[in-house]
Image (cartoon, rainbow, N blue to C red; front, side, top):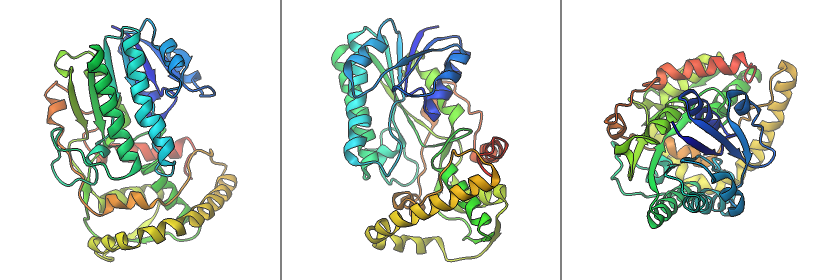
Length: 354
């Protein structure tokens, strides 16, 4: 068992990392910026500390007397400015690795992302060249590179994990935003949705499986100096994803609609759509606030439309996970078909969704 620092512990993944590492018997230090709510982490038995990946002294202070650093701090929001993404996701990763080296940390695990491959295609493994396209993608790719470079310069054993789109109880982006958007449609009386069959396929991964993978590679000798895709066992077609979300929130589905390839034409109008959606998302936020009040919901989710998310509707995003499974890893949620319904049931139980 090890003394483990988890950065970004107050976030969606960071909270689950804390839970998994504590349950595995590690002594956990849960770190995040001032103002983060770390009460749950303390209840789990972790030590709560303040840190900021853009402030080197705070990172050094948090990294003292630690054996392992799991660096999960980062911004996952496609609407944030490129400068802010770079400062936190790229330079912040180097700062965390440098602090770990200064404090004699033995192992550094960086949580990267499959987004470093860009809008990829099929059967992507860890040796596939990185081709980040969005500012978020580029910030994660550079953060991974800088952290590894810093660790190698100072002799710190490192491992990188690249999760794909993470979902699960407590998540506020991706699947959660889509579910909130569909719920809002129903509340507005638009309870029927036309979709096409099939569509591009993509992987997802449950937050618990990402945390379990991080705990495994943090101590496994064969994980040193390696990169691991963390994706579930079977990709889900976009049509099945929308059908699963719609069914869980009570939306009626009709098929067929326009073929999926028609969505590719949207690329031609992305600059215009980005401008239009600024006003549209403000309207969605206002309408959702009314639903939250009327239905006595927790004000935890926010439906919105982001143009860059539409890229995932244009091409396949499938990845190989055999390198991770070669370490003996087995998924608690092998596909999103098992995990998504349970996640959406959690949102309803906690009154995040009506």
